[in-house]
Image (tube, rainbow, N blue to C red):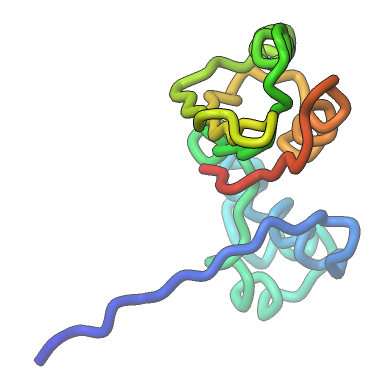
Length: 150
């Protein structure tokens, strides 16, 4: 008999819109992980949740850490075919601490070229959303989109 493969579906959500008990479950996990407490009941009591709440969510909540943070992003954008536009984008990526892994540019058609970038963003000083905003503000760029993040 074939086993059914789990289909995990994840979302990245700003914790400000979530019920506070999610963060309390994470706090309880941290107490247990660091050895500050030995038992789930003590961790739950300290953070102000029930044991059942802890057990209900413990396997579904994770905090970002270096092993789970995003390190790569794929960005698509349109550049005006003028001298200096692409180099301005490349310089901005470097200034923000990013590193270009791949860059693909189409032939200019109608004065515009499509560009697809794969970036190492592990050392960037901006969030992916802020990075897209920054690229959108550069001279000669348009239609900047975050296509994928890993």
